[in-house]
Length: 147
Image 1 (tube, rainbow, N blue to C red):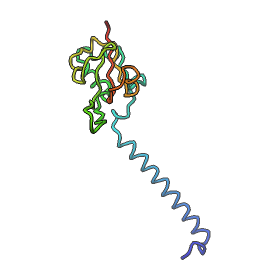
Image 2: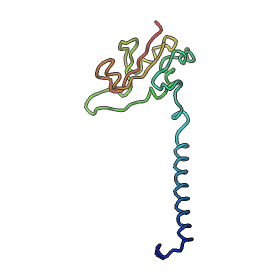
Image 3: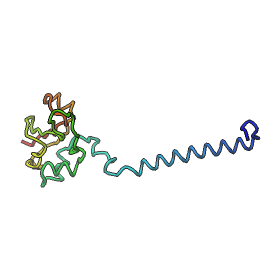
Image 4: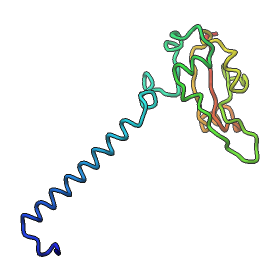
């Protein structure tokens, strides 16, 4: 039956059905997004600074090395950024700087005690290039010590 021949009651019922379907679909989408994310992935870092671990936070993990401290407090800093070039052998993980000096590759974090650190900061590629020059495709873990 063509819609033009529907009587007013049928039009109202069709409108209510469409509105209910749209609302139901919207609610289902909102619910699925909320349940897909794990609490750790969506929880904001303390003080709203996901790229900084402060002295106060490091005090809670003073008996660990820097790698373990980052793993416990800001695991996203340890994320592998993936290859940035098919031709060059660029690191896929951040390089490490301590007190403004190059310290080594990512694995050297295990040689630094968390108790010696004042703060640990992740610098993305742009910030790392500004501070330390080009060649930090995966960013930098920048550690300031207490000394």
